[in-house]
Length: 180
Picture: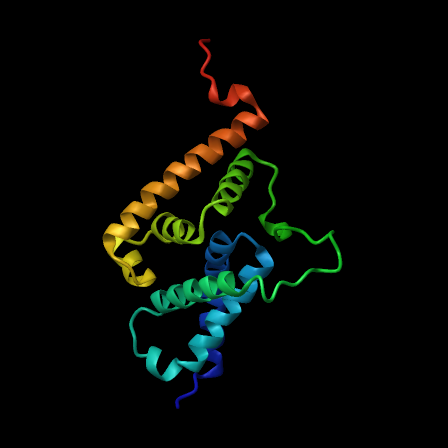
């Protein structure tokens, strides 16, 4: 079994951890769990280094490992639920908080994404956040391209409904066009 060079592996983790953590957050909706899932993906990569290092696309391996870890966590969540001792923990790191409209829109989208079933959420994250093709998303999820397409259509429809109801609840005028 070949171990990775510590410097080489550290550089890989530093280069890819931020992006992988954001993807994990979109899949699970919790920054702390996203950090755990990211660590799991890198631990599994380290263990499989001899096999995977020769592969040209480490990013695909990391995404697939992350996706599988997220699905496993969802399956076993009811058995391993942890509760922090304090409610004053932030939902997001301070660096990700911004008082602008883009941040508010992102928060609305992420909240709506959390309401979707895990399969639809995974498809949407892979297709639109990770910019994967239908075929690549199907390969990563271990399903057919038709399943990816149908889950994408259902997920987008559910997101539209959720965002419309959230925006309407927040400000009914947001969804009403008024002539100048």
